[in-house]
Image 1: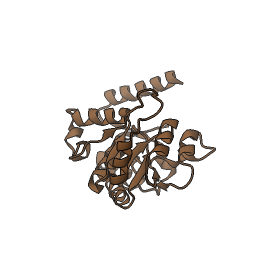
Image 2 (image 1 turned 90 degrees about the horizontal axis):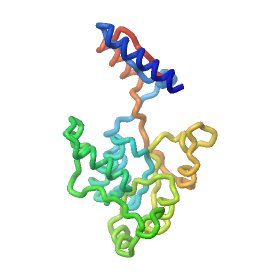
Image 3 (image 1 turned 30 degrees about the vertical axis):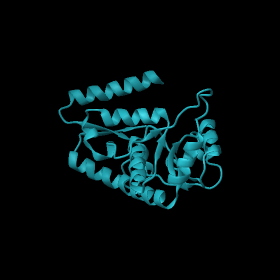
Image 4 (image 1 turned 60 degrees about the vertical axis):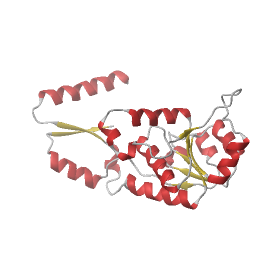
Length: 226
């Protein structure tokens, strides 16, 4: 299967080089949902800001590779005046983006504000747990918090030991928590057990904008990617 994918992408690359007119390699999934529209990330940021102001203790589950969402949640927490916590891996990702010299780092979305994200501390004697001190619990109880979580025992344990009536939010494709789907994640589903809000928007372009995109570029060919 890997060999077939390599051959496919080589074919696409060669075709792009040989032809004077360019082709477009596109995701093929959205043709199955032609009437779908995607909420803008900026609109979702405002919704999270309102939620964080209303709810003192929020726990959001999302994919760490969704950089836009990660930074949107950070800025929403910043505007709501809530401390923002991530694990070390997520903090490292954010630091790399902020400190890069790419054009993306010039956007205000990918810059830190007055208070930077805080990395949760691992327990000194048990790396499968986060360290929760009495002073940390007192701070969270006073200020509230936004925690970016994963479906794991480590985060489940953390949530059991910190104060607050936690508002859980799923901010990724809900197929991950629906039994019967190929992408079903049992750990995530168990961590979200009970009531939670679903606040998400697709990263895929909708068909209306896709048609306009094609109209403007006038490519020689469209190559759907399965």
